[in-house]
Image (cartoon, rainbow, N blue to C red):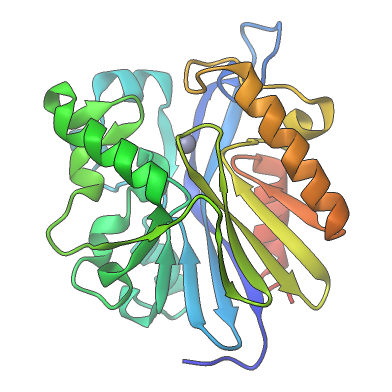
Length: 264
Ligand SMILES: [Zn+2]
């Protein structure tokens, strides 16, 4: 369904509370951080309603590993259906679903899209699909790192691969693939009346990490180089498009943007 103009809204999907060093390298071993789970809802003037990410699985107690639950305890959970309901929407109102990557706190709500229009063509990076599907079917118990097989290997879900060179969905909506945090992580650039916004997802977790150039200190990223190389590309993109950058798990920014409601 076409909309009047393109606008976006950040949906609160709850949070996890854990050691700050998992997100931002810090000498303070005891520092904790609240990490928001979120989705971005877009009303696009040509493409209709687009959803970027789906947050955690409501059934996390059963599906997440003991390791995950110990390292990244969920302190608040809002399911994607509940978040959409607050906007008067259901999964059937979504025309296009994009997953930045297939980690549990981004793909956790995917099962709700089984059999829906959006669920028949979920966009994710081609490289990510190769890696995540391989891991899902070769790792013991179907769990590898932050990948959990039953969250994204679903009979009612099909994927539409985004190539490494990216994909222009419209003049004001461009997907780009980052080689950081996972094998291929889909970032999104959206043009609003107020200018471009870059949604980089988990390649940069917080504004502090972006501005101070601090890579994560946890075990998720394989090297620091991937963080610094991708950061360079993001900063060039920020300059080129005079864009605002929206980070993967920044609680202050998430809270501020949620409070803005629709952003045009
Ligand atoms: Zn992730």
